[in-house]
Image (tube, rainbow, N blue to C red):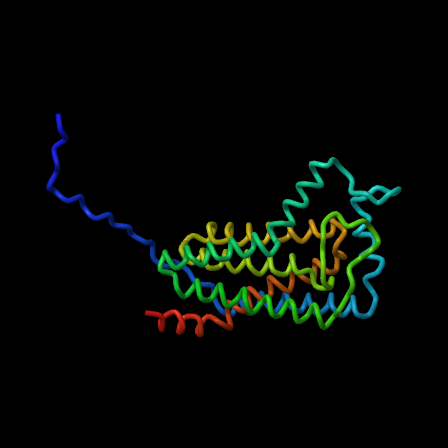
Length: 241
């Protein structure tokens, strides 16, 4: 028996998007960013003046055997450390940023999408400029457990993971009116980027001072950009048809 053809059209699907529930106070963002960059400046001065040598050497040796300076733990632990550091690598970081940018546009948060993109792109320029100006070579005290090129200070993985994850968290936090949800998003981004930074020391490709300065610089730029670029991002988003 042939199927009957229904002439009644299906109802159109309606998607209700939540409205913005929060926007970080620019003054609070500027204060948080300034505090991070003061810490970054202090670490930079200590490195430049040669006052971090003992601290850096102790940090690189902390989780390594005394004999061959190999990383303590099993091969699965070493692989987990490499997987963690990959979260701050160029490929995964770019994929996550593009996915977040696209999602924000579909959610009609164009202002947040533009602000996030501007924050990440300008932060990348800042990190590369500082790295070339300082010109610190990578440590050779312990074996490197992953390939790493370029200068050592500040850690690019640490800087850009803090920058990107916090910028994304701030963008999506605008959807929630609940403080606990916002703090969970932003706090999770901070913890994840700290783990990425810590993995760079475990892999032997960065001094501890590199990753501390990198994290402070990346987090600081994420908050400063939130305060400095909010109005231009809003104007640019409203200008797009």
